[in-house]
Amino acid sequence: MKGLKIVSTGRALPAKVVTNDDMSKLVETSDEWITTRTGIRTRHFCEGETQAALAEQAARRALEQGKVEPKDLCACIVATVTPDHSAPTSACLLQQRLGLPEDIPCFDMNVGCTGFIYALQVARGFLLQSGRPYALVIGAESLSRITDFTDRGTCVLFGDGAGAVVVTLEEGGIYACTLGARGDAEAILIEGPGPERPYIHMDGQKVFRFAVEAVPHCIHVLLEETGLSLEDIDWFVPHQANKRIIDHVAKKLKVPNEKFYQNMMRYGNTSAASIPIALDEMAEQGLLKKGQKILCVGFGAGLTWGGALLEW
Ligand code: COA
Image 1 (tube, helix red, strand yellow):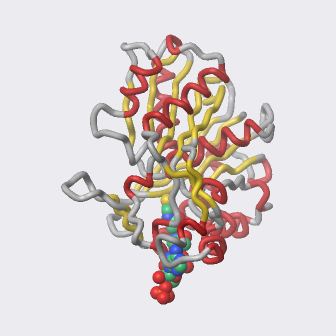
Image 2 (tube, rainbow, N blue to C red):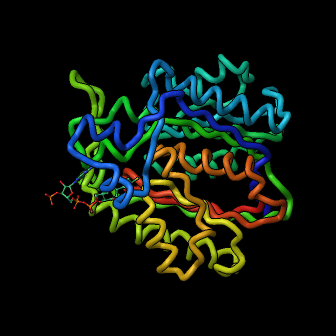
């Protein structure tokens, strides 16, 4: 079986950093409440930057770092719930801005916060069919555009950013993926385009209960499929929605907390961008070593969930 390998990574964050104290000037909240309930301390908000510009910056970094030429790409997929336009998609804008070949698929995928994992698996499908060696997978969000800054239950949670990876197939490498969905418009609802600005609505407790069930489920499915055990996994890279969700899962699985990478304190929940941003930070810090087994797991609007186990 041909495994999926991450060749290189990149990330982009808007310049503006917003602290919990800044949020407390907008709604009745406090640094103490946000930190203890979510782990989030700061987040970045776009101020002039577009979602496509963030996606472009992250993608350029990943391509440069991997020394990958656009002509060697077989697909460009952007996972997002906040594209700048319904059309052209962000992936089509990247085709233009990065000078990607015209004979490859370029499209956006909306799978909520699970988008990056779904996009990895779709990219693998294109790689298996294509003569070209690489695919570009990006998660990019400008969630501040759809945040209701009068709703303290949601506005403190989200942030903007983008992460990108270049992937290729690897003979013999470990790879497994699990994806799932359960339609539910009450847990998380992002309004469609209309005369009013679309907002995110969420039943926080329902989402919390869903997340602490979905993450261990994905992990168990991937371990069963590969015959690996929890101890064999070097890093768990979960969607960075909330520290309490991740801590709860680590405790439930009896896995040392340090094996679950966390950066939501700096960025908040960046939806489809959170896992590739985390991977880029980890790579930059030298945390990821060749041959290590990395288990990425996402969950979010849809409801959707998904996990990917791969070797670094
Ligand atoms: N600051 C201060 N108080 C707040 C607040 C804020 N930012 N947001 C909500 N509250 C208040 C509520 O109004 C409520 O007050 P009340 O008791 O007077 O009615 C109280 O805090 C408890 O609200 P509740 O919604 O029960 O809090 P919670 O402990 O469930 O925490 C979340 C709220 C959102 C942090 C939590 O439910 C959560 O993390 N859910 C998962 C969300 C998530 O990760 N979503 C993305 C998935 S991709």
